[in-house]
Structure formats: C-alpha cells, structure tokens
Image (cartoon, rainbow, N blue to C red; front, top):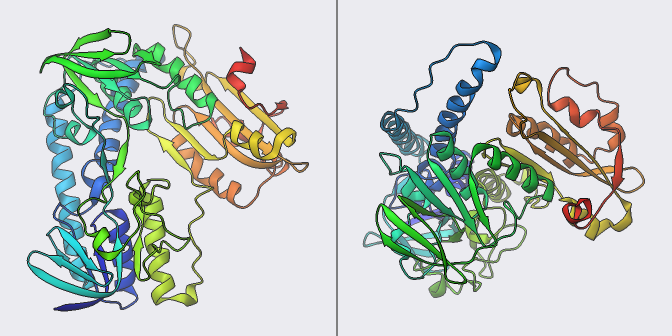
Length: 463
C-alpha cells in the first residue's frame, strides 16, 4: 500500500492547486483523475470558452471596422480550423500539467478513485493511504430528465462540435447559456434563448440583466423568458422545444441544455467514509474546507459556493499553506467578495453585493451611483446602440463601496483592480479622489456624481 501526506481525488483547478502547493512545501501528494488533467476549466470550460470567445469577439470587431473607415472583408469563420487549433492548445495544457506534476514529484494516477474510508482510496486495483484526503471532483452539466432530453447537447458537447448549426435553441439564461448565445450569434447562427426565469442572468444585479437583454435584442438573439420547458421532440436537425400550455418553439437544428451544473459527488465513496452529502449533491464544509469527517476535505464546485476556477485554486493553495507552511498566515477564502465576469457579448463584471442584496442588509443607508453611455469605440455607429453601463452600490454614512456592476467591452479586464479596492473597504470619496484615466471606460467609476436611494426592485421602480 502506498502512503502519502495527501490524497487528491480530482485533477482540476482545485485539486492541482492543493497538490502543487503541498509538493512545494515538501509534502508527498498523489492526484487521481481518469480524464485529461486540468478539469473542467482546461477541457470544457474557461480556456476553450475564452478561445472561442476571442474568435467571436474578433469577428464582431471586424464587422464594426468600417465605422472608422477601415476596409475589412468579413466573410465569416473557418470554424473547423478554430476547433483544431483549440484542440491542439488544450492537449498542450494537458501535457504541461502531466510534466509539471512529475517535476514537482507529485504522483499522477489516471484512474477513477473511490474512498474506502477517511484515509484510504482505491484506484486501478490498488490501494493508497494518506494523512489527509481532498475531494475536488468538480461538476457536470445538468440534463433534465424529460421527454426527448437526449436530443439536446450540453456545454461539454459544444466543445466537441466540428461544425456550426444554422439554428440553435439554448435552454437556460444563466452565464453559460448567455455566453454560448453570444458566441454562436457572432458566428452567424440563429440563436433562441428559452428559460423559465423572467430575466436573464437572474443571479446578477438587475441592471446587468436589463442592459444585456438590450444587447441581445440588438444582436438579433430571440428570447422566450418565463417559459417552462416540458420536453424536446422531433429528430436531430429538426428539434422542437415543447413548453407549458401546449406551446412549442422551433424546429432548431440543435438544442443546447444550459440549465446549470451539479457537483460530481456520486459514486466516489463519500458514503463509505461517512462524508455528509446534501440533497443537491453538495458537500458541506467549514471555513477551512473540512467536511464532517476529520481529515477529509472538499473544495471547488462540489461545495456549492462560487464554482469558479480562481476560487478553487485559492482554497487549495491556502489549505496546503495551513497544513505545511503555517508561517505564511493563510486565511480562509472570503466567499462574500469574489469578483466574477461573464464572457457574454459584451462582457459583464461584478464584485460584492447587488443593489437588492445591499438594501436587504443595509436598508435606507444604501445609495446607488450609475451611468449609461455609448463609448468612443462605437462613436461612429450608424444606428442607436445598446449602452455600456456601470453601477456603484454604496452603504453607510461613509458610503463604503459594497458592490460594483458593469456591462460593456473590456469590463472583464477592468474589474480586478476595483475588486481590490472593494476588499480594502474603499469609500465613494476614495473613488472621487482618484485621478481618472482619460479617455477610458474605467474612468466612469471614479467620476460618478449623482446618487439615488437604493431599491429592492430597481427595474420595477424605474418602470
């Protein structure tokens, strides 16, 4: 039987982070994963998505070049070439991680692993024992069990497509659905978004939802919100989406399920080790990622908090520091102030509380500063365009900035520095005293002047 300081089940962002940091501190670690290293982020998530987003973004920018007198012949996209280049790049990342773990002295077992007990894992017919076990198995797309569900694909399937459909229905209006919708529409696909929610990006600030819907309208993305899907019918290439009240939409060449993801906690032996699992398949943990079983830890998507790559990486590294380098004074991950971006067209960016969340917590002490504008990049647009939009949510007499929300080109690159400011407790006066960089979009956040009281339902109140 092999003995280790830590056994890591899952070779994604969180699992690799804890193993890498632990090995750097001299600990002996092993990573188990039957799939190529890198997890969802490298193989079916962040990286292939951003590469595809760049292709769509370049195509969109080229279409607007004529506004500045630039002659560009835009004939479309060689999608098969993009797929091949993307595939080759991802394989390079897989190989990098395999080699990197080897150089670090971290063992890699490309097998499916199961817990035997709180200190023992079995994989590939062998048994491994460790002082600690980390569960970092990630998540997987949800496919609702309803008639015809297998006619629909998932976001994982999307990255295996070698061609583009002429039309597609995307079921779901969260960040995955809207990211896919924006990319596919930029490529020329006829896109319809169908969702039970009354607004897109429902978990984000209402301003973000409202402005993104205006951009979707401008781009020609059809929306059927407040529609409960009951099933799929037809055949591949001609699929109909059936919704409540005996209605249906379509036919569509393809349908994409984008109704969320669930933790991969099934069939990995959690029950055998006595680890608690919630009805929604998440594993509850304390502030240091420890489950109800001492010595068994969980991080990343399976804990049901902020399923984002940097969050899993931060949790893994801080955990390893706490075990093997306490002199670094690691602190737990603060799940209340996590910056996040959606790579829609255009992107959205947010950190901290939404306006309704702030009003619920601080009541009448909330003041909101916001703006909408066109931006110089589209100064010569030949028609009305959907705006760039920004919002500061402030609370208390000192107007501490408790939330920032943005929609527009480059806000994804803008947010990081402002997230530092929010974490440090910056106030509106701190923003006001900062010299703006002109002409940029980011200067808007430090030049906002007019405030209004916070509202629990700002879209309804503004109507």
